[in-house]
Amino acid sequence: MGIKAKKSMMKKVKKGSSELAAVRKDEAADFLPLEGGPARKLPITEISENKSTVLYIGRIPHGFYENEMEAFFKQFGEIRRIRIARNKKTGKSKHFGFIQFASAEVANIVAETMHNYLLFEHLLQVQIIPPDRVHPKMWKGVNRFYKPLDWVHIERKRHNKERTFEDQKKLVDGILKRDQKRRKKIEAAGIDYECPEIVGSDVSAPKKIKFED
Image 1: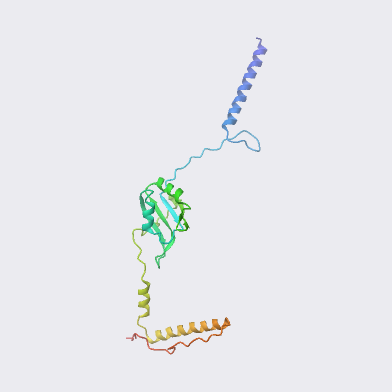
Image 2: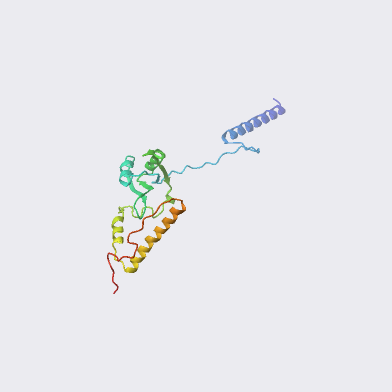
């Protein structure tokens, strides 16, 4: 074999190896850019493991409160804390709350299983709250049972409180003012109705008189 033949053979070998390397490089790449150019590979993103144990639960039905929630969700795993948002005055549920599990895996399973779960004609909305979004006051007072106000006792005490003659006159004037406003609304609606007079419209003495010192 001559020198020229050897050189041509070496050129063919180098060309073949470069083409093979280019093919392998293209196979390893994830996509080819539309504007042309060499193939590119997508950056490898590490999947971060969710370590949150707190769940938000929305659209909680009436009657499904702390004890019922604990009895239902403890089938998935150990529960640390449960809190339902309530009205400060009435103590009634605001139909959303939070629950914390001892394990992040259990929290993920509950979020996947119970999201859009139909419970008492309500579709529960269950979502994981990231640790950096958990408010520091979220669990404030969670161990204290809310005692609703006795509004009957409060209203009775307000009604039976001691009043001066000026307070009594102010009370009667308010009743008469509301009555006149009601009469004007009925007349403006075109309703032919004769409203009965309020008995005792004259300022009467209060039941309990408070004498000034």
